[in-house]
Image (cartoon, rainbow, N blue to C red; front, side, top):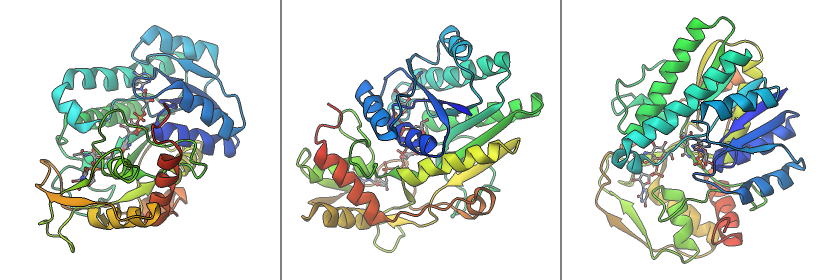
Length: 338
Ligand code: NAD
Ligand code: UD1
């Protein structure tokens, strides 16, 4: 069975390629390097032990995407490709809507033409919105509008896929709602490599640990949580990658529409994260409390029961292992892939 992995040069995609190959799938990777580089593909191939085909294409290019389906016999798509920076999406929403919606639509058009009916989509916990009860459960209706244009692209693509399942007999769509992916491959060869100053907690903390940034700014310490800092459901990227292998097994059973959280079910505070990372890197990381970041929710985590029951998948790695693996990657590659 051949899987087209879009965005497979990126953070989650590269880790998923390894788990797919391990599980015996053939893969074809497509990426335009808007947020990644060839070095990630080179290292992923090495870790896979397979020279899998790679195509440098912009998936918004309908003809190029269609040509991909002419060139390879594809059985299923895992669609990671997309722009993902929440703050940036508020500044350039048109680019976000265009890239994320067009890439999904061009894939669906090519799939329709080539009679390919299996689509796994990288969605996000952000679709639950600010008012959903915690822990987030798949039975909770999604928000009418997410808190950012980025989140809205996820909501819109979810709707497009739901309508596609209704319209095309035999079409299967798995919507995977990720919580907060962190960590890196145990080899320290691949990991998260954001450009510029990171917005997300874990890559920021890693850059402080390696001396590239001065100190961690903890956004808010007056939240109604045990230590006053926000709680999130951090999930190791390798566990997340394995969730995609489980989703592929589900899609092979002709699941139709299948919506599932990928999280651990545990909330960890920002302060706990900083302390765990200090242990990993062997020195206390400097931090200071800063004002709350606009739009942040105090606490959310996944109800992971549905994934356990329906996919037979459970996240296995804990916070310390996530921090150890990020430290391994960051200390081995202080400049990322450069
Ligand atoms: P990433 O930026 O590392 O990977 C995305 C990849 O897609 C990049 O390699 C990029 O170059 C590629 N890409 C973007 N637009 C493209 C296009 N038009 N054509 C071809 N390639 C294109 O991001 P990631 O963290 O690996 O996230 C993967 C997916 O998971 C994204 O859709 C993201 O929105 C979603 N997601 C991520 C998180 C997270 O915290 N990382 C959380 C929830 C959901
Ligand atoms: C963000 C996105 C979300 C996306 C997720 C995973 C926002 C509003 N949401 O979630 O859509 O799915 O990333 O990539 O951006 N923090 C600090 N100091 C920092 C950075 C972060 O204290 O320098 C805190 C934040 O206030 C938050 C926690 O750390 O409480 C986690 O932040 P972050 O890693 O950005 O993830 P989310 O905001 O949960």
